[in-house]
Image (cartoon, rainbow, N blue to C red; front, side, top):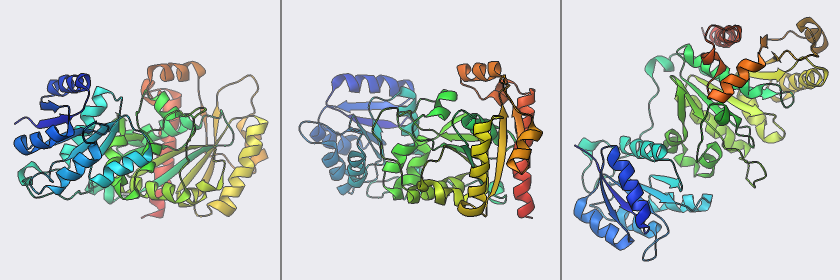
Length: 396
């Protein structure tokens, strides 16, 4: 039986657009332009979900939401707020009023329908009845996954332009290809490169999630994840060049990673170049830290100091490795010379063809999927196995 959705928005064009989109996905849609009429229709129709605008002239969405949740006959109905108000305080006010999700305008039709499906999935239709609000329950990890060691792998760069995001993406895909449930999180604050490389265009990202009340992260997380390939979910960031933003605290980063580790066997974090102390607790939690470098003096010098700092002071319990990305520039040093300068062996040297890398970026695909039999792909598969085997040896 099709689900019935009630759309409350004071713009008729918005109602028409949403109605057209949702009816194509099999929903029955009822629309109204006022909050008061929305309350009347909710009592009359008892919809399966309400999509509620915030800024309306007669009664704002927060008040409508509070009244719905205060009504024993309607409190079980999930509510998604849909608004152009993007400030974290507005979202907090929405969740405080009782909303189950908060979507900012404009949004793509695909994201709107996926968010609606995610909210509806939290409610058991056979148990939904007036006066009973179903408790939220966190998704349970796959039982076979629970029996295997879980890892946090942090990828960072000795300097810019050393291939950190390329490593994070292709390592995560290689782990997923090996039948490991994997989450790739982009914490490289400003550029938003993971999403760009994988052709993901989030309207809300990892840092928007962190602005929400912490107690709601576990429930909101599915709305922020994207699945570009099987077994891999990506938590991207948006580019924030020349825009004001509030970076997350150390406590928020650790709390979020803890949630991610509950959801997947392998969590890969693209940290970019960690420039301040906020990342220390996150790094200390890692199982493996990969410091990326290129075969040239400035990157090698930076990598040597960074590996030493991580190994002795910041994350002594993690396995810290140096990983060299060779883009075959005209000026390059052999692996033996690099290892001699570092004073320790490289975990791996990975050869990257610039043309293949550009082709993968242009197609929005991981290079390991674009060239499944290529040398680059085989090197990443070996790297993924190395990291898994190292952890398995510690967990007999």
